[in-house]
Length: 235
Image 1 (tube, rainbow, N blue to C red):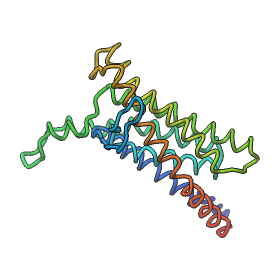
Image 2 (image 1 turned 45 degrees about the vertical axis):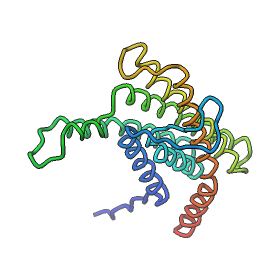
Image 3 (image 1 turned 30 degrees about the vertical axis):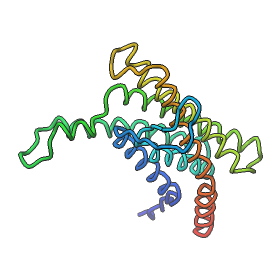
Image 4 (image 1 turned 180 degrees about the vertical axis):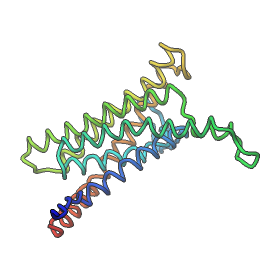
């Protein structure tokens, strides 16, 4: 009888970062329906003194933090597998949510209409968010890895800010443009907002996302450093 061959254990850091990425992505899907508004003490060109953005902004920002850390630690190919596998999981989340919405409600249940209003994202939002996700996340991984190669692994702060800052711009333009302009105009689904309002939403969302991208840089250093020390000690 041959001895059982020991199976290699997956890196703990990869498991934790994957969990953060998927949890943040699922949370973003469930919180996108609420629109947040932040009053500013000054007016921003094209956006005014109020920044409006979906409630998913913070949760979605965490996905970029997790994917950048994952790319830094495990490489471009592994990060793209994570991003695209999670893209498929978006459809699983939608299927589970809508199966619950369509299932009959018990008399003691909360109002089914209210439940659907909160969790049942409209078609235009789903189309915009899915397209924005798959394009911007893959772009983020590619740019992050390209800058790492170009700088010979130096200047982690540079690749984090540039990759996340530009990918968040791409994400914002695609999401707002598709959800509030293309789908309503071409297919007649969802509210069609005036062009000035669409631009205002883009500017407001991107400014906050860029601010978060800059703030998360120290956390990228902390997380990647901690994971490297942990995985080196376990070898």
